[in-house]
Image: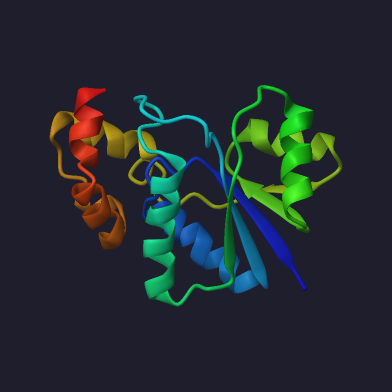
Length: 164
């Protein structure tokens, strides 16, 4: 059984993330999605709680028939070895995917196969760009799955970002 790990902050979960998950879910029997910075919320860089990010991901994947995933979270420790060790104790996987060089280096140092996943329209689909657009009142609806857009509106995510 082939198992992959995808690490990200998902602030918020957007269409680029969705494309990566769709691709990996087709290639692997199980995809573990680890939400990083679980202890971070209420900031410009990390406006949403881990529970909200979990909800965004579930609402996006389940209607698309993606069921071979498990969601996990990890807080920031500022200790590379402790961070990777805790993830490896939580889930058993063959390869880790991320776009973050630090994340990939942490796993490679521990002898884990680590790969960069493809970027899908990086300038368009990025959490930073979505948060910037929200802050400046620029349309962002087309950058996230409709389920995420509706969810963020229901929890007043736009207002939260503007207040931060």
